[in-house]
Image (tube, rainbow, N blue to C red; front, side, top):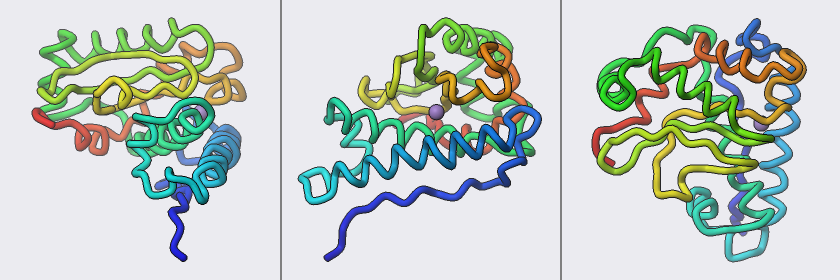
Length: 198
Ligand code: MN
């Protein structure tokens, strides 16, 4: 019988390709152990249940407790790691840049607000850039496995602010890592997630 098992995607770059912003050691734990564990747990929890045939984004929108936590953490990590490229950095383009300029008064202003939202979150969680159906942009932050899908928004970009994302490379200096992540953002991928209307 066919069963719906989520497979962990391979990274689109080598483990050491994002150095010095994110070390190979951090990627090997964060992607190789943390992300893998969330996906393995998700697969165990949905096996032979009504959730097995539910699209992952609908699981995130409707589940609670540890199923929500593992489903959302699986989705969030895949989304996070696919936002980076060793050839990344620079600025967004096209409709997303236009929307950022309109909503936040410029790309530099946006980066500052985004970093502040991530640095200001107490404890573990995520900072997000999302859009609503009319293409308006929102910066939100949320604890633990939070995902803006539960607020009816479509995610565009996220930074992981759990300590496991930065502690090996930056120890307690979360703000330093968030500031450096801009150097590896793959704006081609991130811009492709945005559309003026959803
Ligand atoms: Mn993480």
